[in-house]
Picture 1 (spheres, rainbow, N blue to C red):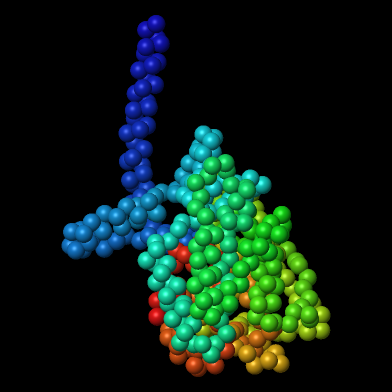
Picture 2: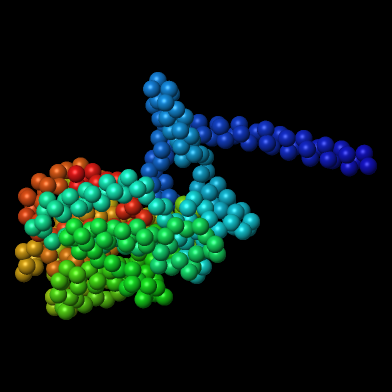
Length: 384
């Protein structure tokens, strides 16, 4: 009996020491380990230490910024995210950081309805732009996300908001303003048994982008009769941002395919990365396949402005206002335009009006995924 009590006390003593030293070890590690600027696993910029200013302290912003900073720079953050997700999954939890653990191996990002004021401001900027440039052909392709098309694969009773009322409202407003809305929802529903979205990432696959291109081509009066492509896998080890963000399915990988043009009408393009002052003869940056963010294979990721020149018979110039969904689709459009200018408003600080005049733009295409479109405010600023 005495031995049992002694062993019990010894156990409690060791556990007490363990929990006493853990915070100290974490504190020392946080001091000694250098801050990281970018998380490859989460594919995002991490918060840096906020500056200590009187006005920030008075408003309470410093505390919020510092909390975000400590969360982002927590020692062994990636390991803890994976460990927590694994524990939560054992307890039956099917959602983590806005990512749902779906069936058939899919991870799906939730949709958050935008603030009405923010939505109205974006739509107003687009319709005003359409009015100012009634001489330009204007199109909008706002792609539904997997949480919309593959909703049957969501966990039972998942409290997910519906994208469709917002897409329907946007379609009506833009159509009334003279913008052709390219609605790919029915096409995607018809093909939802195919791999339209990655399992571990929020992007559509190249197959999904190709179906969207075909519908866009019909709306934009593009002759696709000479199109010919061969589908080729370039990696089977892609693990996307939804896996990193949630910690779910950390051992699963996706395949990335490219569609290589074939036939006599294959044309070579020159891709000019304006801000970076570099040029390439390929839409694909294969060096990115060596990194975690393998989707950056397409154009090397996102850039403020990219100009694509192709020796076509037509002399048309297309301006694409976009997010990263456009990166895997624009290569299909390139053979049909003399010049395509891709502008990502999240990083672009130039004058769009001047750009349209200088480049003699005749057509404009908004190309976003719905989650980014309804959450982002940069498009309104760029158009205004």
